[in-house]
Length: 167
Image 1 (spheres, rainbow, N blue to C red):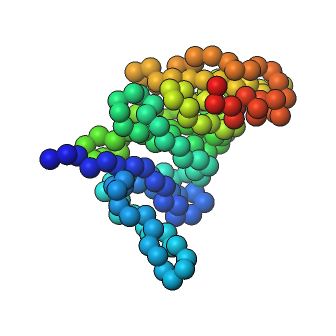
Image 2: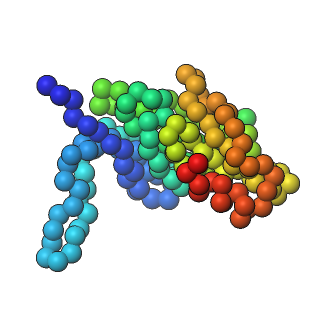
């Protein structure tokens, strides 16, 4: 019997509580009501509590295992960096359950944004002197490993050009 394909979704409860949900990919996501399409809530088979503000959810095959992982941007303090800031969490699917792969406390700079461009997690980071860098990371068994800078010490506008590029 073939295993059902699953996907991650975010269920926002309020500004500081969300649930990362693992849902069947094939479940119908819309229902017609008259002329309007109305979003139908999917049935989650697993949930992971995120008791922090979540600013972004991206998905992609981070560890090259053939299944999408959830890349979640949260705002929270950590033990070594007590000031709330943007952090990156990565979750995987294991037998219909959600499991953490990486709960990053900090990137190289001040994390502003991220996106997944196979095989990279591309980050837009600020520096302490008001400049910006765009860097690519890949999964390396325990966590994210730096691969390259696309640009360093540039204006926000210049950094955005590189960050949004698919190259």
